[in-house]
Structure formats: C-alpha cells, structure tokens
Image (cartoon, rainbow over all chains, first blue to last red; front, side):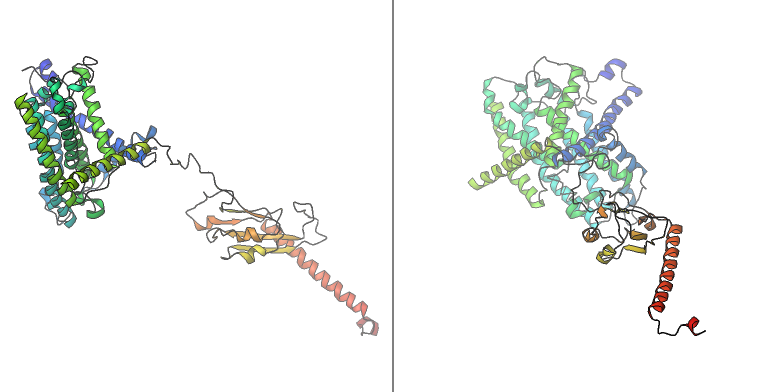
Length: 350
Length: 188
C-alpha cells in the first residue's frame, strides 16, 4: 500500500513527527472552528438581511477570536450539586470524540494521519463518543433540563445512526473498501466518477444513480442530526430546555462544547465529501490534481457542505422529538435500506 | 402508502423551497444601518430635543400653560422705557418683555410638541438632536435665557424702580386731578 503520510515519508517515524501528525489536524480544527463560527454568524446575518459582526476588525472577521477570548476570561464554575468528575470530564470527552475522527480523514492523497483499513467503521464508533459526552454532561449537571437534553440526545443517536450507517455501508459495498483513502482513490477522474453519481464504471451505473443521490441526501440529513444542529438540535432546544445538555456549562468548558460542535460538523462534512464527492480528487480529471491541490479540493468541498449545514440551520425550524423518530425510523431507514439493497444487487450482478 | 410517499415528497420539497427563499435573502440588500457611522434620515416631523430661539420669544407663557409635565420654567420682566439696553425682536419690532429665565428640564419633557404648537411667535422648535443622554440628570436641565443672572437682577431692579416711580406719578396725578381734596401743603 502506498504511503499516506508525507510527514513520515520525509522525516521518518519518531516522537517529533508523531506529535506533528497529531498537532496538524488539531491546528486545523482550531483555525477551522474560528472560520466556521464567523461563517455561521455572517451567513445567519445575511439570511436575515443583517450585516452580522462588523466592528471587530475589518468586516468583523476577528469576532470569533474575540468570542473565544471572552469565553476564556470567564470564571470556571462547577455547580455544587454536580458530580464534579463527570461534569469536568464531559466537555473534553466530547471534543476528544470529535477530534479523534480526524485521525482517518484523508485530507490529501499524501496526508491521512492514520491509514487504517476500517476508517469508516472507526468514524462511526468514535462518533458515538460525543453522544456519551453529552449524556455525561447532562447527567453530571444535576439539572432537569440538562438531563432531558441528554436523554433526547441518546434517543436521537439511535434514530440517526442506523440510516447514516446504511448510507455509508452502501458506498462501502460499492467501493469494496472501508479505507477512506482507498475510497478517495477509487473516485479519481471526473466528477461523474464520484459515488454521488454512481461511482466509476460503465454506463450501467445509471441504474444506481438515483439510489446514490438518495443515499447522499439521507446521509446528509442523518449527519445534521449527528451534529445536533437545527433542524435536529432537540438535545439543545433552547426554547424548551434553556440550552439542553450544556445549560450548566460556562467559560472554557462551554467553549469546548462549541468547538466540538463545529469540529463534528467538519467531520461529517469530510465523510460526506470522501464517500460521495470524491474526497481530494479534482472534479475535472487532471485539472489541479495532486497531493497539494488535493487539500484545497478537500477543504473546498467540505466547506461547501458546512455551508449547506449552516444554510439549512437558518432555514428550517426545529423538529419535535416524535417527528425526528418518525423521520429516522420510518423514512430514512426504509429509504436507505432499499437503496442499500438496490446497490448490493447491482454490485452482485454487475 | 401513497400518502406516505406524498408526505416524504412534500417534506423534502418544502425544505428545498425554504432553502431557495433563504438563498435569495443571502444576496438581498441588507437593512442594517451602522448607526454611529451611518444615520437614518429623520422624518421632518421628528420630535427630538427642543430649542428655543431667544430672539423670537416674547415671554407670553403659552408654552408653560401648554406643557403637560411642567418642564418649562419661564420668568419675565417688562422692558423699562428708560433702560439704555433695548433690544429688537427678530422681526424688527422692539422687545417688550425681558425673558429672565427660560429653562427646560429634558429629564421631564415628554416630547409631545404641544409647546411648539402653542407658541405664537414660532420661537420653539424640535431639533434633530437625540444624542444628549447623560449620566447626570442635572445635565438635562437646559437654560435658554440670554441674560446673565446679574443682568436679570438689574432688569428686575429697573422695573421695580419704574413701578415705584409710576406709582408715585399716578398718586401725584390723582392728587392734581382732585383740587377739592384737602392737600397737606394747601392747608398751611
């Protein structure tokens, strides 16, 4: 298997390079989170025909920095009634869960922190850790709103995980690999070779194009639920539950929740990009194709998905809990299962 | 079964319609006015801080009578004919009343505009200035009189003297008009 980590190629595997490999996605997450917070503020403002932050720096681009500095200055409060250890642990577990998924995200053909064969499986296993962190935070806060948010989060988890897993599994069947780097490699070529459009193959793939597009939509909807964002932000539900599971959190711990949410957004966008939009591949054959440009394409595609997530957030109202259950179990699950079945048949008789 | 698929389609389609609407709004003209840098053009009948034009005020006290919250304090003194200090109104006629005190308390003022409507000489008008908030209530007490307190005292003294002289003259005249009345000097 060809190498997927340019740092280890260049400098060998030693303590310093391992730290560098770990720190690179972390630095990316921190910078990305600031950009995404600004994008969220600006896009929400533009959708509401406002200007958004304009006073901090030129066109308000320093607003997220100011917000993070403000959160760092806040007093670090631990409520008396809370269970201290779990309460203090929860934000870090959530952020670790979101950050651990970056280990298998193929930023470029030359950079993927950990080249493991069960990448997608690993992402789904790790993705549930943030739900665990939410439950931990909600339970340890000793607050009825937090607890209700945490319980909703669990019921949401089991509703969206299965359709999302079905959608991902269909692509695994199609590409016969769980390694995200190999899935990216399989889609090299033009944009009609992406798995969104049936993947590479002869003309017979037109039969599965409707199914792959449906799966992409199903996975996108499930990923919105995974990141706890509107229209599926029922664990937070600020009009019903104050702020849901992070009601009792403030300062740096709240900032960790905030960063974790945005990191999670990028993780699901990166998975969407990798399995449906060709990962780091250029959409136009050899045009700007390569390990360096791959990073640009990957981040461009992921940010487009993040943009759509923000766009959806400021368009749709929140679902009720029972509506989410209906959507997850009665709509997304049968639809994704039918698509999975159709794609499996196609792969069998191809 | 049909309603099931129809519901899915309606749900999906309405989400797309909503996203199309918000997409249009992203590029629409923004309504925000960045206040200290940009300003909203005030309408011509905006009622903000009041301004007195002392050169027009005749001291008729109609504004004081009109004010529903009693925020205007007005004191006047008649102009004495032999005062060397004489003034003209803005329209050229000689001043008849000195306005020794004209004070408005904008902490009380309700900006109803009744004083403006009541003023017969158009001496009060609303300005477009609304940025005079203060941390101290006494800073909202505006004094519009043009006379200094010393001048005001001087005018009051002159008027008192004039009154006294007038009273003396009137008495003298009354004595002169009644020759039958016993006069202290005549009896001598």
